[in-house]
Image 1 (tube, rainbow, N blue to C red):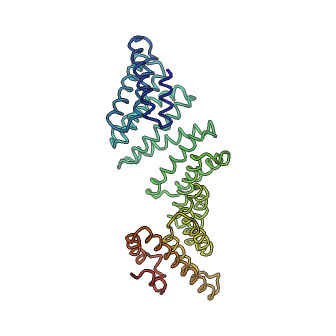
Image 2: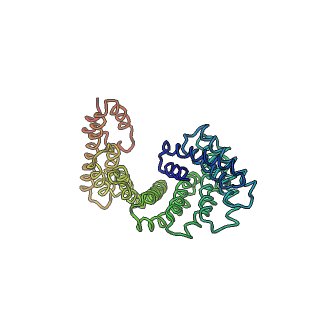
Image 3: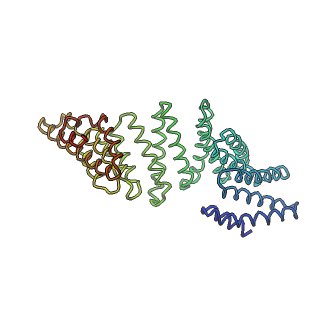
Length: 392
């Protein structure tokens, strides 16, 4: 019916209030039809869809649960009365998935796991009988992803968590293998790996995380190059480079980290790259490339709309230390560069103080304490310009 279709479209567009009226009208009409024509299961199926979609229009709470549970009741009856109809099985799986999501957002992890597992059992059986049903496989993969997220939040179940994650990856790989330009599945696969990288890092399996990120970059770069305006692929690629940089930073492989930090900055939305470029400067300094670190820090300082000067001061101070130890420079050049960078670090702190004081005296008061104890700024503390800056 037109009301159901309109409500479904409005809900998908985020227009929940407008959707409710259409969906409630559709629900009442299908309820009447289901009562009048009890031998026609399609009306009950559409009624269940009305309840499910209404649930998605509600805030997380009792009213949403009531909608989802009513949809589940109808789907259970349909499967009981028509056990050989795969469409009704799929709708039952959807209902369990809805209730799993509601339980997850309400913090009821045991209920979320139970509903997700019920949905997955149905999806897996449909997949066994119909392995080429792409819609079912996509829903199976999403359910496996959700189950892995639930299990990640529960201690003492690492094996089950890994199993759910591996099953999700296998399903998503099937989808991407069958259609390499399926951007939704490719991005879901990439984000699954990014989230799992945190587990791998905690388990001291950083090389495995790097291998996953390399697969992500290869897969998403191809998609991004074919459609650079796809924001979801851009975001997935940016996250993958960012995670790679984080792991390399943890391993103190700073020179390799730089390239990935640069790529993260390149993929930032226009006007939002300052923080990412500050990370580039910091990575360059830690890698020992003091000249490029300072050049990047000065470029970031010239951007508008940020107060990253404390971090830029850290970069310049570290660059001064690196320059002083650079065997490729003469003694005079080492001293000259170190002084140049240290003086720049103090000027960065002066700009930080100015920006903080513009926001209120308390901002600089708290920052001043950090300036006085920060290990990277320690080489500046014997300088007269530094003392004048931080003294009350």
